[in-house]
Image (cartoon, rainbow, N blue to C red; front, side, top):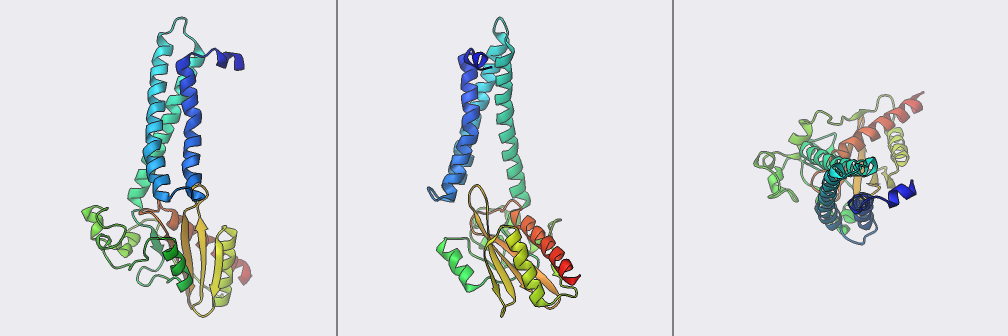
Length: 274
């Protein structure tokens, strides 16, 4: 096999080199952001979506040229054609993923999701201080139109600019719902939420008995993006909220997280009741 690889034409070796470099490039962009070598805007926007598209374009072009050269070569060899096909497939896969990401962003234009849109659970002073220290997005009012809210000013369509967080959340098909307490006490509710957060890998989990809230911080694996999560335990139900510290769209991550946290909490409350 190695001997066959060594006899590949130069254009096939270029395709292989670019195909091997592509995932390494994206890993460097993501992990460099996570460990603080550069900020998230440079890592995500400049390197991933900017430079990444250039690398993908080069790979696709090289693979297309390699495929043509492989088809006209005499005698025709199978391996160069396979390498060209793999290069085209890899480039197409990333382009498809990028298109899917854009579609997700359009379907999930905000980064602040709560089960109670009239009175969303509030974060503690400590969490707000941590967000401010990190230069995070402001935690905004749910009734204010997006066109008046940072970081959406001048960055959303006229249709979205007149809509509030509350209107956008209530229009979503997968809108997360509050969790009824049932026969559980508020203390049991707080304990269940805290245990569910820990099981999900959240960090800095804090319970506030006076406010009857539980807070935690979620962090993405690759880029290390942090989202703040809070659950408010009322007399009859538990409301949840998850807010990204950076970015405009959360790609549906906060909704997914709340639904997961709600499901885990519900299971733990059911176990406690038995």
